[in-house]
Image (cartoon, rainbow, N blue to C red; front, side, top):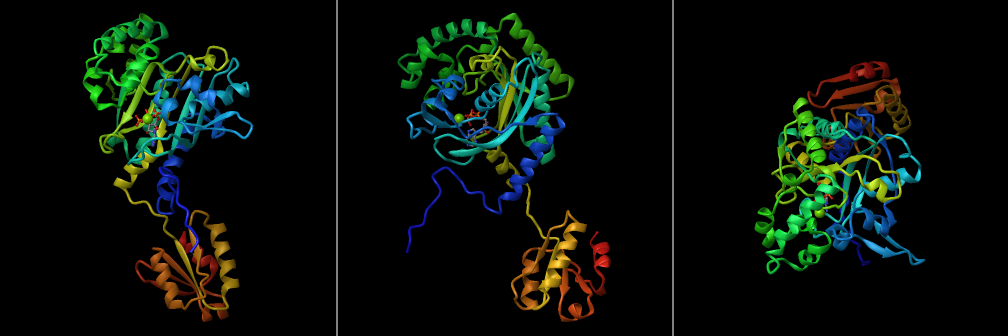
Amino acid sequence: MAKKFQTIRGMNDLLPADAPYWQLLESACRSAARQYAYQEIRFPIIESTGLFKRTVGEQTDIVEKEMYTFDDRNGDSLSMRPEGTAGCVRAALQAGLLYNQRQRLWYLGPMFRHERPQKGRYRQFHQFGMEAFGFASPAVEVEQLLAVKTIFTELGLLGKVSLQINSLGSAASRQSYREALVAYLGQYKADLDEDSLRRLDSNPLRILDSKNPALADIIQAAPAMIDYLDSESEAHFKQLCQLLDAVGLQYQVNPAIVRGLDYYCHTVYEWVTDELGAQGTVCAGGRYNGLVEQLGGKPSFAVGFAMGLERLVLLLRAQRNCEQNVDVYLVVADGAQGRALQVSSQLRSQLPDLIVQMDASGASLKSQFKSAAKAAARYAVIIADDELQNETLTVKNLTSSDQQQGQSLQQVIALLQ
Ligand code: ATP
Ligand code: MG
């Protein structure tokens, strides 16, 4: 027998039973983006490796350990995108969208990270993200947080998530914090792991993002960025909190949130749930004012988030049953298929919201009724020999077993409406 191929580890097929959850989630994301006047942008899955090194950061876990990087046939180093912000900014800059303009953009698609696969953590996963450019005020952070809240509310998940916020301050205030942090961590050199020792000089803030449990206590007791904010950063954070209060968005300040990417400043936040174990963060974002300039654009304010869709599907599946049930099932006698095709297309064009399935098996009527039950259809429209001869239809309500014979197409449509 021929060898059967399998998916690559950590990359999943999306099977028909999963699809309705994804459709529900994606449509909630799309409709919130539309309501908030964000425009869709799509950019390639593969970019120059340098793009991610420069934005996500050379000394982050993502770039050091998780990126799918390979040489193109002509020797250029390419990477599969591990997140969306870098590509979004690159694309917007390339098209001149950020030149003296404000923009509100969103994207949805697959991302790739070579991580250890487990529940809620995969090597191909999907993110929905919103990015706004040109806005200095924390009102835009709050606007995006409200859009996320709209999505959670629409999905019935608001009760399962909570919002945690923090500030990473301005570049200047991070400098004085960095000194305090290095001095503190310097006392524990003997306890730090190899990664952390290397980052102590180059990127000490990254040590706070370490997932090594042996370092948890040291990190827990480290000085907190939020105590080192300069007056500008403090004002931004204070205003953020006031706006959150004004719109009634509940939050907790968590000084431990630092985010695994280098580009953030000022606001950072995570929406977390306690129903997914260690994979509890379902949405993460904040402000990244320096990034546009870092990619060769004019300095530009920027705010965004990314939502992990697999984790939300896990939450959705735990709380509701989502199936795509057939509304109308056509039971068709041998020789009636031509008429059945006509009837079913008229039903579809006049009742576009209904799911209409025609039995094309050529099996006995009895076995067709079994298939209708298996599809959990609500109604059967029957075209047996009599109906074919009289040019009528029979409708059967499959929940109550009520049946009406001798119906015209218009009568059937009126009944199904
Ligand atoms: P984590 O701490 O869980 O590794 P992260 O900080 O690496 O998350 P971000 O880069 O901020 O995650 O990505 C935003 C969101 O994307 C995460 O909050 C999560 O919901 C989702 N996400 C990130 N990595 C994965 C993955 N490997 N599999 C599934 N979802 C993921
Ligand atoms: Mg990660």
